[in-house]
Image (cartoon, rainbow, N blue to C red; front, top):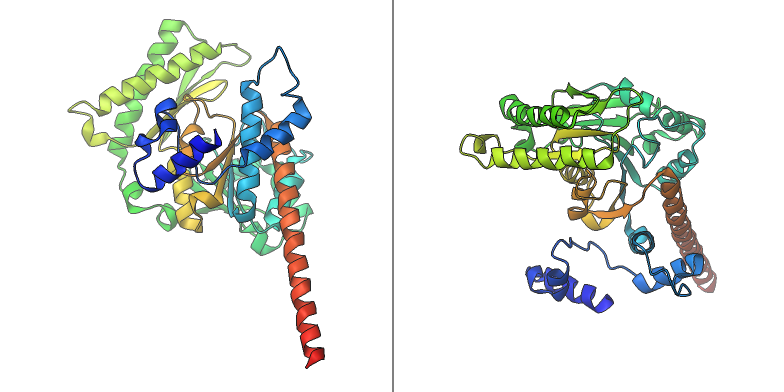
Amino acid sequence: MLLLISTYLGIHVLGVPDQSRLKRLVPSISTFHTQLPLRESFLSANAKHSIAARRFVPPSFNDIRRILNTAQITAIAPKLKLITFDGDMTLYDDGQDFEHDSALVNLLVSLLKYNLIVCVVTAAGYPGDALRYEQRLSGLLKGFENARLSKNMCEKFFVLGGECNYLFQCKEDYHLKYLPETKYQPQNILSWSSDQINAILDVAQENLQRCIDEMKLQCTVLRKSKAVGEYLFYNMKRYEEQLDECVLSTQHRIVNYLNSPWGKKNDLPFCAFNGGSDVWVDIGNKLIGVQILQQFLGATPGETLHVGDQFLSTGNDFATRHQCCTLWIVNPDETQGVLLELTALLEAKKSERSLLTLLDHSKILLDSQTI
């Protein structure tokens, strides 16, 4: 496996990844933005989950996912600059707010103290409404205040809403401030017109309503300026297969429309995804969101890490893997676990730097005494 990946990386640098054996075996494979210490990560996972000792239960998908997460954390920790997080089911439970007593509060505070840029990249779209995002992240912002984070640290925390459409920055008063689109969005995104946006959302809304009618779903459609979605009436149950049907059929319908003679002029990127209890279609996607953040904040794909739970083809974290390193978690408890791994490595790196600085000072002092 290591040889397959190494060969793929070498061929990818030459610009012909399709010629690698790994690409032929796994056509959907994306870019490796860093080397991955898979052997060391397997040994670590094996010590915890006894993978090699199991005779009747082979390595599971979750085993492999955790091994890859550990490998990615180990690889990127020395050069990590920007870390982004999904919201629901990554930082807090689905549809809930960030609680003040969450274990993730202190871990995110630690990331800022390690001089990292931290950003929540969420599909939740509240155009220019900082208060709505502050409500969702109230426990975290309160944690910043309790930790008395400096102005510099506060201003390294961002929220990007609507996938890629609304950017907010934390200020020294521990409140979010909306940043105008002209400050951070490239011209090709600023040129998206309301007519183009509405044309795509009209097609999406029509198909979502068709799904509701044909599957007799107990839900309603909500239209926003750059999104349209369907969500269940309170306490109603819907099966995962129904959500995926809504997503995949809507993706298919929009793609067909955009490829038609009358739809080509409205060809904008979009994201149709299963949110776990609802379905949404957003104009733009998280790949564009991560690209915007990298350009605005000065980070490369190999210095950027995205943490999320929606990496299936019907999820909205899926696209980020083309633009940065990723960690696939399934709930906030797993987010806590990967951040404990990451902060341990960051602390080790900090201690190493401190030791090197001390040795340099000692050498200078000895040299001066010798003179």
